Image (cartoon, chains in turn orange, cyan):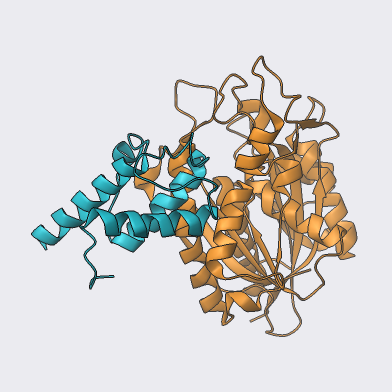
Length: 314
Length: 92
């Protein structure tokens, strides 16, 4: 069986980036209050023209170019998202049209954990020979479902897209570690869009407590399955929900300055399924990680659902 | 943890003080029973969640959200924890 690896990563950020004092709506926020509780300084808010397909296509085109592959060898396109404004078709089919691909195409709705679910689906597809190359995109326009009069959540989220190319390796050497994934459906109301509401609702305190308690256990299990100690990680790229969660989990894992910890949430807010590839792209673009670095992904969110794996950095 | 008397309010206060300073760092005012978490100790809601999580582990109890939101002072938390530890031992 082939191995699988991530060969490239790219992000597409909305042109418009709003500070904590520039949010739509009538609420006024103190910049320092938001920064101290979330780490967020700015977030991208997409314009009408920057729709899901456009954001996904821009990120996808950059990832394809960076991978240096012939687009006709992409056999599967997956879009991890919870932002599709219509029930059908998914974002993936019009994305393939935009990128002139003829691959299989489907959306994966795993909320903030969706990208890490997608990594495993894509990796298994290339390992088994179902696909030579997979384009995996995480894309969100959370602003479409944001209640700008909700003082508890409206400053947390942002829009954007990130994409990776996952390819088969010539040998059985694998650059994507075993997945740890799971769910606790009893907590389905923690983060949800109720049937009678156009907006996303979140019990922030409950989510925070769940995250700082459970995420570290999931992360440790993913490291154990990959045969690596957390302290040996070159990089930690968790879902960018809140810098306070990221810092708490990093402390609990015993990470030191030797591990680069992604902090894209400071500039992008919580971009749900897009947050991990966007955060990884920032680390690559800033030269803070190198190809081959052992990197821990962990996605978690609405459901509650989670998925985590150790990968080699593209 | 089991060989000290965690139902004793003084011991609970000392342990809770350790937890608070471990999570939030040294405070500029004394951590007394009368101190309010927010106004006196400057602990925001997320820091309080972290303190509760560690306190649950340290005292081997569960602190329900409904109880947590009603705790405004250190003394109220100490009393709740002491009662919970005592109840857990009685039923053990």
